[in-house]
Length: 139
Image (cartoon, rainbow, N blue to C red; front, side, top):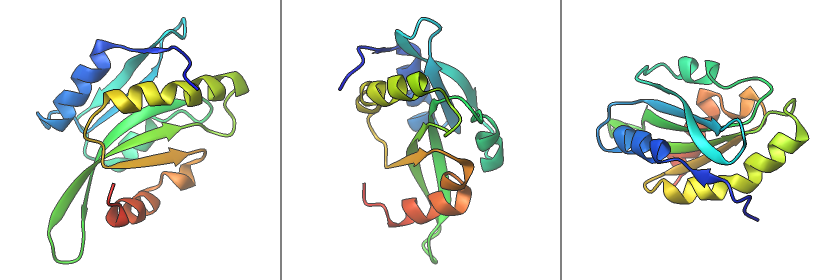
């Protein structure tokens, strides 16, 4: 089910900057005040995963993109672009429903995502959990 929420051009431009320009490390997306458009809430060049997690509010839904770097065996560094759907247990039901029904519009607009992470609490998006998922992902 689609909510009819549009994806702002700014969302696509920030994603291209992260994917192609490697200028950004992560992007946090949210809904505009009138709930009609997905917009960029924050971008960052910080390579610290904890800085990224600190930007996810404890009681509000968000989407995010994170350029996840890791090492697998002796193969050296790898990088996967991860799409996060953040829907904490404490967020409002209406917000959860709107974010869930709007996700596909953003997800389909962002071409080049390697893994998808869904989180309802911080244990589901901690570094080790995500590392386990992306290192076995053939997305």
